[in-house]
Amino acid sequence: MNSKRSQHYIYYLRHAECVGNLAEDKFPKETDGLTETGKEQVKLVATVLPDMDYIYSSNFRRAVDTADGILAHHKERGNVIDGPTVEMVEILRERDCGDLAAFRWDSAQWKAKFGELKTGKKFYQLEFPGSSATSAEFLEGQKQFLKGVIKILRTDSASKKLSNVLIVTHCMNLKSVMEAVMDGNFSDFVTLSHPPIPNFPWALKNTAFTKVGVDFNSEDGDKVVLTFDEVDNTKHLDVLA
Image 1 (cartoon, helix red, strand yellow):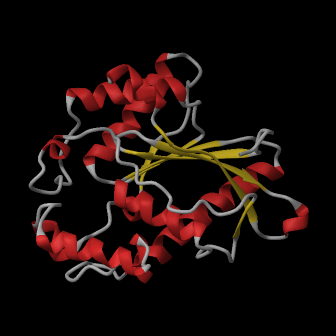
Image 2: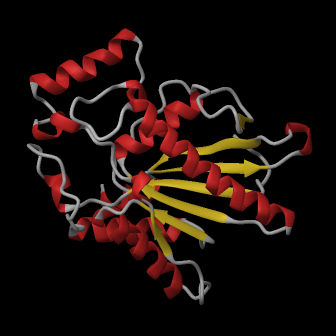
């Protein structure tokens, strides 16, 4: 959507395939590592991503292994020497689905929960009994994290540095945050350079990523301008089809 280069880019990426993704009857465990296919996905996505200045990851093993793998491949291609380190951030964990985590996706319990979306609710607005956080608490955590990233990029802009940020997270987390941004929930510090994207897609494929341009313009005051240049990009996975 942006014909010119933005000052900075944030890449929101779903982790690579883990052992738990192969089991349809339960959620992946926090400790699940990557499958061989997942490791190949890391190599493929690393080839299309630029070198990163900052890397943030959920502290679940599948996300950390994805972030570490991308950084390792970038170092191998020779442009990253000292480079960034992977910073684990708890708020980037998968959404806590509470009691529903014990049920299959095709269970009556999940069908009832997803049925709430037909009433006009967005996924980020769903409440999960037994969860460690309400939807409002979850979104506030995401907002504060993004504000922190934007603050760093604003400082980089002041010193004329163009930066790339990688955020490795999870399917439901990514869906929730993107929908919330589109609905204006972060409008106290974010404005979009284009109309909101309706029905923001799920990152159903592992290592799908969304590329977001970040710009600071004097006419927008304290707000950051975001441009969604690429949404749910999975072209790097075509060779595995």
